Amino acid sequence: MKMPRDILTLIIYLLVTSSFTSIDKGSSEYIRLQQLEQRALQKAIVKTYVYDLTSRKDCNKTKIKYLGIVHTKQGKGFKILTVFFVFSASATCHGTSSIKIFDLNNKYVGEYYVGMPDALPDMLLKNKLLYLDIPEGCNLRKGVQINLEYGLPKTLFIPCSKAGGYLYNFNSGS
Image (tube, rainbow, N blue to C red; front, side, top):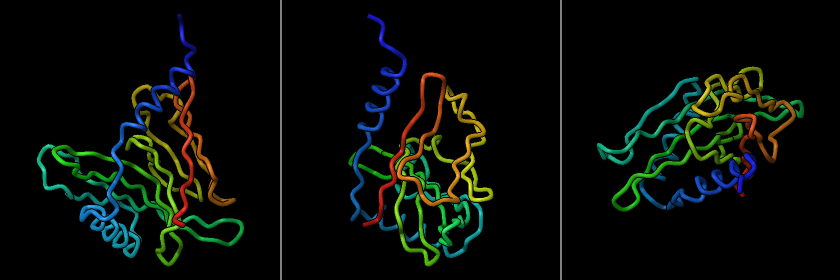
């Protein structure tokens, strides 16, 4: 029996996202991540910061990228970070990626969990998140723009291929 591509894409997406280990919000790595995010927000320099939070040779490094400030038509301002957080979980390393939103006083507002680091936007330009690269198998992602001028959408859709794309929900800080 042949399975339609959009159903297959959905099944793969569910398998990938369900395989991530939950983050212990009390862990020293997570607490350190929050401190480093605040440092990036205070510096407010558009750049990527790279940190080794696990101290393990076989793990990737955590990356925090300050993208800049979004100004909405409603007069609100938000600072945007992309975060690829690598942490230890028993004998292995795990990672999770998200687009994090803060107010202008660096208070956490919420985030979009995107799972893999290649799902993070590359830059912020004129209140739009931009995707510049083409990850393997996602030829429709290059050039995608997410307009934040009208506020933070509850859901982001990022196209990948003709077979479909990915939906990411906003998770508020409350």
